[in-house]
Image (cartoon, rainbow, N blue to C red; front, side):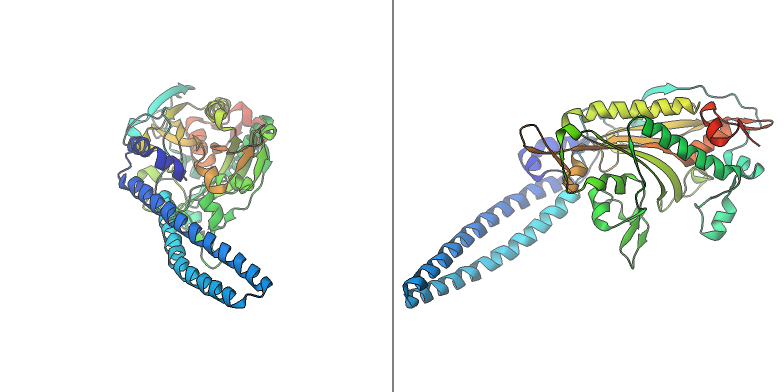
Length: 423
């Protein structure tokens, strides 16, 4: 959530940065400033009235102590009158504060100065590429055919049990999932990330903290009776671990990793681009999260990108890194890099990771702060990244490594999987 004082003091800058996102409702910025001015005016009136009430109430006690009951009664009537005057101001102040909060919640994060302008994914900037695209024979199969051929994933069974977008992993397909999860966790913990196993359902306050609410309410599965949400990513529960806490500067950075199943409704998804594992409603993902000093967050962002890139190298998959343009960034992000792997059988790039700096957008909602050496309190910056999401990694591992004798796995997975081939 943007800071109201910052919006008020930098109204035109806020509009300018939001325009980089192609955010159309810039009038909300003016609305927020007007509501904040009204809030401040009402707060002053309320504070003045309350001060008079406090002073008169104190005087009543003094008069009663002196036995001057008549004068005390006059003061009581004055207090009653002041309270009658204060009540509608307090009511209007509460309404104004709610309206201000609602307005600010509609505003996405401000993109950093490094974010390129653009309207859609076509305007994203390729930062660099790595790995080599395999040369497959003309009869190379897509992963959904390979999964059926080698009895690795049953999409029809998932449709029977739950519905479209809920695949069932079988035999060596299930083992590959487990191997990748363990490998990713080991890779992250070796880099200093502390492992957590968080709940996969969260309450509304938690979802609000990381910005899923109210922005992505329609994309999350909701358990109505218990008012809980199935998580779309481990970022949600993991970042909230430090909600409402004040950390010490020497304890920074906080580095966390977690594996969870993830759930996304992806309403309206259909067609060839969502076939097989290209887009599913339930999937496994290993996440990394950092809480860092504000002055170091962009340095840490690059470190996290490098961390994921080195992991991509070990999987021996062709990849590219994109710097997202303003029009393609998520609601909460100040800057995002996407990782894509090349699907040789489908002949297209598939997104497998996003690494983002949220600056103080999330921590302002969650009140995650730290005390500096001068004992002053500041908001931390939060960052997160996929390290990695499994479905499209699996799709590309199957497609790019298909041979006449089976699927050849990268060397990094041999010990985890217990072999070099899936056949």
